[in-house]
Image 1 (cartoon, rainbow, N blue to C red):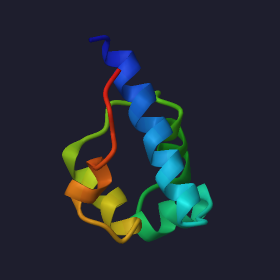
Image 2: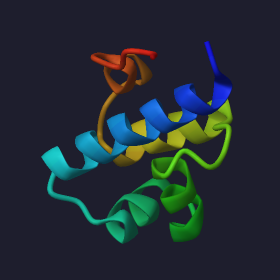
Image 3: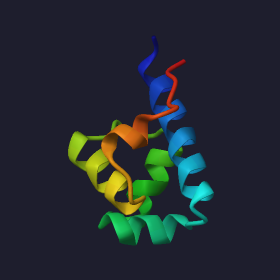
Length: 75
């Protein structure tokens, strides 16, 4: 399994979750206490995401880490 494909797939999954909650990238970044540009790079599959960042994103989306990964299918 290619690492870049996993990052891209997770970025697409995060974008889907964010849009389902009708949040902009700015709103998610603020709610997650992350920089806008970092969230943007995650959604584009440009960065490998740390566990602490995943926890922050889950908090920003008002969900658990388990829920964050629910429905995420690796390529």
